[in-house]
Image 1 (cartoon, rainbow, N blue to C red):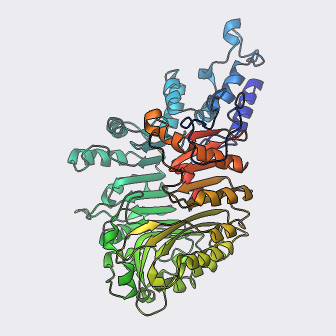
Image 2 (tube, helix red, strand yellow):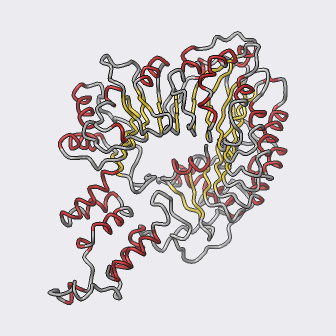
Length: 602
């Protein structure tokens, strides 16, 4: 290998130490002169709004992409020349620069990982070799989502389709061309197309039949087992996420051989009969299945709470359990011998102690779990031992490292005791639910939870807390954490990620201003609630009529917290993500929402 090719590979190797899916690192941007010191006395001083605003310099020297910072200097440097054998027959002008079209295919494939979708389309026009390499890169990982645009890409290695025209063109090309290089396909929606149209359904079926090497399939619109059976090589599928239709198809498909499937996620199943009908069609290998996720609704969808019984009805045992939400019915046909299962997610289920005996066959699902998520769970009383008490005897604390729990119950609170029994947790996402039937005050409830959380102070590095207070009529409101809770959370010295509620007028910012400087390892801070950005400023929309208007309203809060803690790198206020580098410069990031959620939620 000649010298200049080796230098290119070395530069790519150094650049490849940071995954292309990661956001911009601290050292990628350099800034010119620093502005005057920022005023840290108040939280209610938006940038550029009051008479004494906070000054923030966001002017960068360069905004080049990773490939520009690594490849271009190497290719354009005067010290790099082709070897004498390669320059025979070439003029001096032709040998002075390197033609990217003549690079080896291996180097082109490596370079393509750092290129944006638009850059790949331009390089495809150079020659046939570049066209084949870039075409493989563009079609390897496809995402169909109208919410994604040029400024909101979470992963630069993906190819995004954000229009119905582009999606239809993709389906048509997949039906007539060889799309064997498509490995990951994520379809978030059908846009405005009529998905019940017979011609459109036939187009989807034909497209699926041409995906010969698909390994990761997420089809969040409706996809039944009959359409899934169109995939020519189901044995290669490793990740499957689908939403089920309301009714089972009139023509039943044969059993689907998914022997290499590792992750199975089912969303938006309308009733348990449809879910069980779908699960019966799957021929899975229990030894290879690592993750099972069952969500009754699509993620982010607002569902109706009025169907749930009130706390009074639960406390008096007057509520009748909904069979369609019953845990026994939800996991009735889940593979019961999955002793190697590492992650289990159950969302929107109803449980009762009377179901425990019938669930003994499913106990292997809980034995070796490392991650457990039980969200939007309603427990019905019946006079016997409560469900979490029984579940604590099945889950092995030495294996479980991540827990997300939102458990609604009456008369007593068993969640804190359950968490306390898992002393080695590394990640915890808990919703503290309070209602007056439990016979204790909010402060006493918070004290029980914080003692259980601090029991994992030697291992816990991710924490998400929410407090929901239920009224007698069934309505819910968010609450603030009190001072004793904040005092004990400081003992979590290894905490790297913190998600905490901030209610309007609750005084949480003053408590956080005392706590944040003492958390030496904290890198991610997520403030949720109406008061996360300080007091509202109604005139901001008129003064800043631009795309960053919502960021200007809360950017001062991110600046203040980042200056309080030098290790803090990412702050989200009122759903707006900010990045702070080592120089203390805070910038809005419009495309990190999904990435940030993985850092602060379980």
